[in-house]
Image 1 (cartoon, chains in turn green, purple, blue, orange):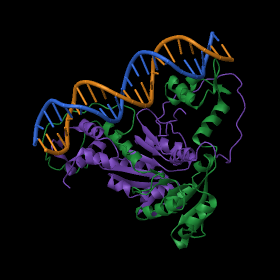
Image 2 (tube, each protein chain N blue to C red):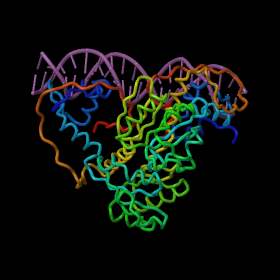
Image 3 (tube, helix red, strand yellow):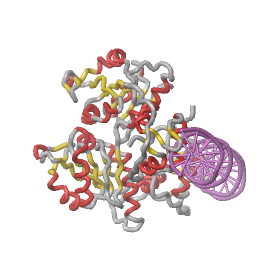
Image 4 (tube, each protein chain N blue to C red):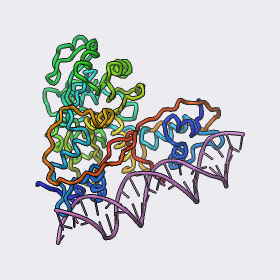
Length: 220
Length: 220
DNA sequence: ACATGTGAATGCGTTCACAGCA
DNA sequence: TGCTGTGAACGCATTCACATGT
């Protein structure tokens, strides 16, 4: 299949074809009127725009189960990410290979980042160590951090942090699951509600859409 | 601090206070004019709405590094999730405790789900096993699946699937990182762009897809 | 003839601003 | 006086509809 139309792509993605065309148009005019989009060319242009054609060295700090899982994750390499180093505070792990990469001690952190020109760090440490590790990463020149630790990290201006909470997706599923069960057959392990201080009328909430995520209050 | 104002909560979350009040209003009128929101009461109401007050037994299938990391993840218990069982196809793991829970063999899958009234399953298997595991989970009565395997699962109507791609967040960071660097100093491991477009067209299968949250690409 | 690219119309979520109540 | 709750205003994203180009 050398070319695709916006109609086909939209159907495959479950979106409106006009939206797809308008989005593509922000990247440039890569389609051909009367024909469609050249698949290979389009893939390249989108990949480039998303930064997938660049080589991104990353370091993973905290080689526990999660760190090891990340180190072994095949999806990284195919998206242009290269695990430049694995770092852990446990001296017992030093030198031991995980996913074919020898673990290095935290002492080497600054040198590793500097030597490899790493700008993205992944924190998979326990919550208690996260901020400390974060500070060192930032001081060493890291400007983007992916945080798996259940802590909110504070970083200086100019440093991006994204927090991954592994339980959020479960919460979303549970939220929908709760709705499937209907609002009546509740017989569950409920905790007792605190006595209502503001004992007032409760307005009925409007029905949320069938699709969609949690009703969100998102931070900046 | 027994009460909070929408202003305080909004500042803490980095959002507009009006948005926060409006969002809360969809849940009911839980605030007190002139005073604010009673913290304990508010927490309970939000928790209940999100389904956090219920006990959700979950099974984790595939006890590799990621499965073990999930089993050990403390955030689950505090959000109302209870790991009812760990399941793996490797007989060598059977009976071996992970996070204090003995791993059970895949043969027991149906019985475990049925006996514990589990409705949410987590798949942390290799990609190759995911669909098969998924089919068995669904047949056993599971109606919500959290998929960590890098595969798109197909499920019957009425079953929710959420896919977690551990590299997506990294992609988002890399995307921003690319922008920070400016569009000029590119000197990187770039692959060569494909040339021009040929012609022809085919049809593809329609399918709705819940999205993650890649940043929007705005006009230059 | 056919599909892109885009100005215009539309819809919806966010923000403003203030009435209402403790 | 102080803060909630909410109708109305606003702005952005999506969708429509068709001019444009192959």
